[in-house]
Amino acid sequence: MAKRPDRSPKIVATAFKLAASGGWHDLTLSEIATAAKVPLPELAQLFPTKSAILAAWSRGVDAEVLKLAEAENLEGESARDRLFDVLMMRFDAMATSKEALKHIARDLSRDPVAILSLLSPAFQSLGWMLEAAGIDSSGLRGALRVRGLAVIWARVFSIWLDDGEDQAKTMAELDRRLRQAEDLILAVARFRNRGASDATE
Image (tube, helix red, strand yellow):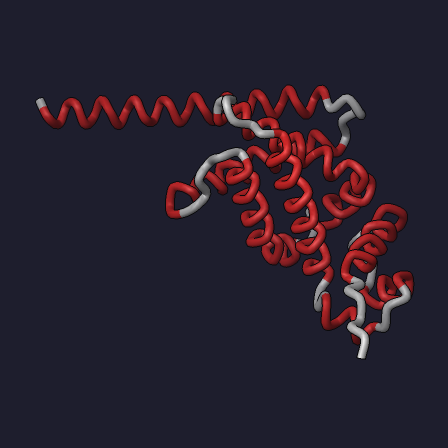
């Protein structure tokens, strides 16, 4: 028997198309199934919730950015510059979904339960962005880096949603935030080194 094709990409694309025109909060899984011409039981097996659709979309963006970052060969740049490039690649990869994301972000801001369900996939995605930039995302330090990056990403993402095609405001804010984070990390390192030096005297 022929293997049934994976219709996950079609479902995700349909969901985002519907979100762009009518919002996310009131969009139902049955409406997505009907528009995608996919039986509801099949959609239920693939995506039990709308949050699962968003997570799948994010994984698709992850894969695209990882390929782009590998092709760009970012070696030779500083860690901050590599991370800046990777995150801008992510914004570029998200550009075709921007209208849908405006509706989704607005509606999710009123749905804390959905936000909580998306935290884990969001952290996973940001972990991959760090790895694409050659920055370790494993262990306790990696977890702290991911959460710090999440704060930066949330702020810059809100600006990107209303930014123009040249993304000038997005790039300026991302650069500013990453420089602030780098300065903080250096300040903490100097403080620790000073403390270690004082302890040996």
